Each structure stands twice: as C-alpha cells, then as structure tokens.
Length: 446
Image (tube, rainbow, N blue to C red; front, side):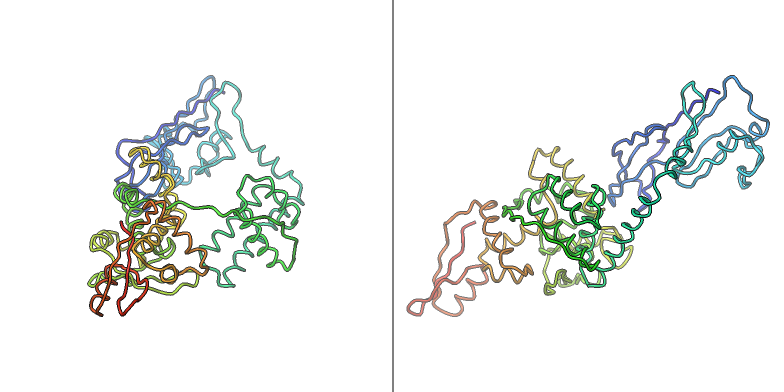
C-alpha cells in the first residue's frame, strides 16, 4: 500500500482569536511537525498566541482497491483538530451518524477514527508499509512498575506541597514560584525524596549563587512539609546591582508594546505597584473622578492610594470589562511571556538593547529611584515601596547613579518663614539643618 499525506493550513481569512474573538492577529512563526507545518498567530488585542488548527488531508490509494464501505463515505475533505470533526465532500452518510462504528476494514477504521492531536498513530508517506505507532504504547507499558509508581508519588507530593503553601497563607506569586522550582528539580532528574540527589543536581546547574540559595530554601520548605530535615549546603550570596531603565526607554516600551502590556507598564510606572498587585487590580479600586487608584498590597505591605494621570485612566477605560479585574483573568505567566516576546521585537526595531532587559520589576525600580532623585529620604521610600528590609531600599542609591549620572550638584534654598518652608517641601526640597532660626533645604539637580 502506498499512501501519501498532504497538509496545508487555511489562510483564506485571518483566524479569530480564541481568547477575545478578535481578527486583529498577525503571523507569529511556524511550528514544524511530522505531519507538516502549522502556522502560529499572535493576537494584537490580548496577546494570546494560538495555532490554526484546520488542516486538509488527502488520502489516495495506489496498487490496491479500497472496500466499498470506504468508497461510500465520499472524499475526505477536512479535519478540524480543535473539535475532532471530519468533513466529507458529497458524503453518502449523514454527518450526524457515527461513521466510526460501521464495519470497515482496519484501514477504514483508522481513517474514520481520526482523533485530535493523536500521537499514537500516523499514516506515513514512504513506500514502505503503513506504520502503526501503537507499539510505542506497548513499550511504555513494559516500563518498570516501580518507576511508574515512584513518578506518580512525586507528582502527588508536589500537589501536597502546593496545598501546604496555600494553607500556610503564602502569596499566590510565591506559591507559583516555589512549585515551579520544585517541578524544575524533578525535571532535571533530581529525586525529591533524596536530599543528596537534589544537591547533586543543583551543583551541576549553571546558576548564580543567589539562584542556588533560593532553590535550597524552596527545597527546605518541601522537606519541612514532609517532616524531614537536611544539612543545607553553605554558599555565599552574590550582591549585584540590578537593572533600572531610563525614562526614555520606558516611554518607548509603553508606546511600542501591545495594548494590555503597555497599560500595565504605564500603571507600574506611575504607581510603583508590584506586577501581581497590578494584574489583580479590580475596577472598584479605581476612582475615575479623582484620578486615584487604591493599591491592595502583596507581601505584607500597607495599602496605599496613588494619583495617576488622566491619560492612563483613559487607556484603562478602553479595556474590555470582562470581569471584576481590569486585565481580565489572564494568568501572570501569560502577561510575562507577552512582555518577553514584545520587548525583543521592539528592541530590534528601535535599536535599543536596554529594552531586552526590561521587566515589570525593573519598572518598579524606576519609580523608587525617581522618588529618591526628587529628594525623598530612604526611610520614606521604604514605607512607600513596602520593603521589609532596609537593604532593598538602599539599591535605589546605585540606580539613581545609573539613570541620572549620580551628579553631586545640589540646589540650596533658605526658608525664614513657615510659608517658605511649605513651598520648598512641595517642590521636593529636603531639610538639612536649622541655623539662627533659618531652615536650609536642598534638592539634587535634574
């Protein structure tokens, strides 16, 4: 039997986004599979990435005669992988009938039982006999029973760890991060029930010391959940200066990113909130009359009310009100992935390599650095940003030197009356000292 499979995508009109039903999509790469190339699309409205799942398959014979029961079905036209529907040209049987239940030969059954994303069977295009990949399933079943049981046990322990973190009131972002690290260790071959195996796997990773310490603490929490203990390896933390974007880079990103990612970046820039706080923000937290936004904090910080620009409020009002949250029910990883894809494309377009390093956290760093540059004390910034440790606030000293050049030039003012003091404070001047009844203020030059 000689068979041949030809697969091509339908591109007569732009497909609709399965997330928001918008046709404002563009092509976003091709996925190469054994059955052919599948076009990938990216929605310009919500940033959702999806594939065109409709394919055409023509199966023809050469050197043999198909049974009459197969000829009666008509010509196989299309297969919709998303719904599992098979379309025929001039079918002899109604579409509503279960054609897979008729008494066909083995070949006929395979054609009419085509399942979505079936990786167990395939029709090859070579001159050899048709291959049935069901023997792969047989080899899988012949694996050691002990290894399968152990793998299922590990998966169960990971689920238990997730609920352990939730029951102990860990933040959602912390739960996602901890579970991701535990899954990564299991994927890299570590036996989560054996601390020595975990140490060996972490030692072979090309991670910085800070990342390794973080993973050690995550695994320590996993063992604590199991009621076990271990000797954590000694390792020194590396103190590095992070990245803080310049305001020009931020403006380029806000102007060039997609709608939702751009609005989220501008929201963090004007309020200094965390990415999780921004994504979980609800419509009820926004006062459009006074241009004020209430921040519901994460990580034990205090709530705050921040005033934003009318431009940002106007952009937020253009978002679809699909639920209580202004950004809908999109997962954090989805928003983060869209940012990583769009920043790379924009960096190549504008020739600005700083855009490749842009993250939601770095935008928050910009907000704190701008407060320090305007004359706010570090203690005031610590309270505004919600830092638990003062060392987290000290980083804005270095960030200020990165962005503004670390100039040592100051503007000095003297206030003799209470009215003068109020004016200087409103302009961002910082009190230095008082001599002979006169108050001296200063502010760093822009």
